[in-house]
Image (cartoon, rainbow, N blue to C red; front, side):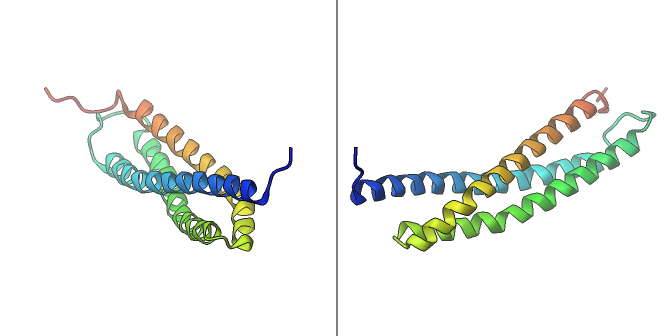
Length: 139
């Protein structure tokens, strides 16, 4: 089956629109993660934990450092996502060079962002798993 130029451009445009939705989703998740990161930093810095827990301060400090690292990664992803959204806009407007550049960079960004999200969610689970039973109880 021969794919005409018209059909090829349709599939290309469809793929670009799908990528645009994915980029917008990432942008929303990064924004949401910024809020969650702020919460985690406050959570780890407030004296809400039971006294006398061995190594509590050291563990909270370790988690706080990890959250700081995630925060800087989150911040670093905003710029490439915005750049890819602009490249995508140019590609959708039929700039073939922009489309080729976009496609070549998009997969790398996807892998990096997916790894970042996985690390972030794993860190959140680890923090809440560790601290869940250490919170002071209201009596």
